[in-house]
Image (cartoon, rainbow, N blue to C red; front, side):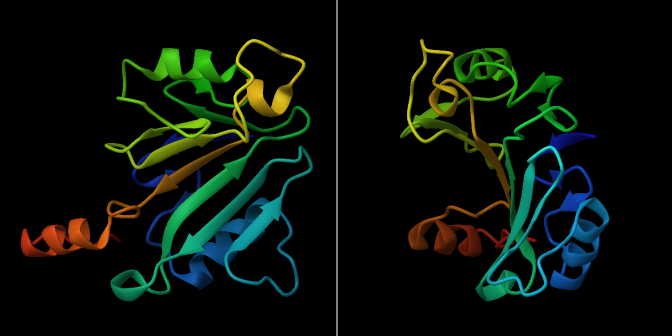
Length: 167
């Protein structure tokens, strides 16, 4: 199955702003949910692809404010953005191909496109060693609601400007 990123709205059928019940229903359609999830909700598909949602606090309490996909272990599922497979290509190739669509900022061993509320992550950089899969390829992608990573000052400025705190 192909999961298409649609920042800042979601990944495939998982949408930012869903209630917990709506998110649970959407995830259960994609794979089995743990009987007693703690914190956010997450599933693991047969390919090894993980899909999880996190919930907001304050004005966005009880609503999905972030969706994360983790790299699959085997074929069957893909995660794409602008027709680029985020987990199949080397990390630096992904960033290069997506640079015409967003401004990517290095962030530890990943990259962030703040204007899209999108983050690509790997545990460490091993840009020149394809045998080191955890560093050569991205391991996860996060799509978040506007304001997800605001500092308190940025949140206050957003509120003062009359902008919503998120979904």
